[in-house]
Length: 303
Image 1 (cartoon, rainbow, N blue to C red):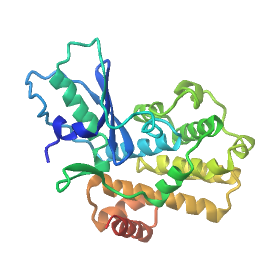
Image 2 (image 1 turned 120 degrees about the vertical axis):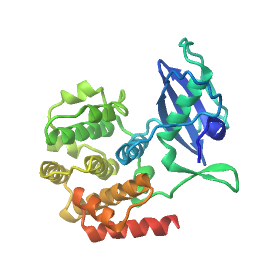
Image 3 (image 1 turned 30 degrees about the vertical axis):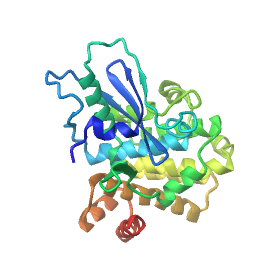
Image 4 (image 1 turned 30 degrees about the horizontal axis):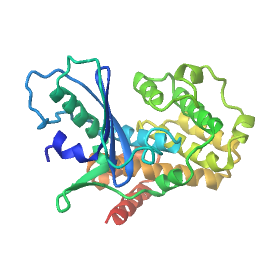
């Protein structure tokens, strides 16, 4: 199906130009999703029938989904925006960058939508967009108890960046990933990078409600690049011990993150064969039979 501006216009909650980027919010079935699209100069003005020619990799789709989940878990971005915005009225901000045409801006909105489009499907019967899948157990936990204190959020940011440094240096893509959710509560990327390693005492001060979610999110982010090495596993085990998790609790939380990761991969790719699921499981240190069970559970849940 061709994605056009007119097709997604009913779910655009906000679109505004920020230099050469369109920052957009889309509301589907009461949930708000944020995406960004670069504005490109195009000599061919196609009006509202703008085709999106961007073909993103499964990895970038997974990262996009994971980022939405992380931002929701720390109470930023999408969560809470619905109550402050009445109905589905589009907010459009004026921009001084008049060198971009209306068609080019619409094309950027379509690109922004494509960054989150795997979360939806278009229902031909009702002629409306629907959320594509029900929440996994992992997502239910994060949705039920988002991180609410600045201390918990900052601890999560520090843990994520420490994990990223565990296997060497932080790549440019990882830096961009972290910068997209860091805020006043967490501190900037540079500030977090300068922090000393988390201590046992600091981790003991994390709220009871936030402790398990911080650990699960850290595991999921570590797994998201499909390069889960021994140094990262050792670091996670160290965090679990410092947070006073018993071995079974630690392993249960890791399994929830693995289940989420394999589901995320299946959803982002559109479909995965059993052999592809096995290969992915090997890359994230997951038992092959558990990965297959996760695929079956996802199929049952989604019908």
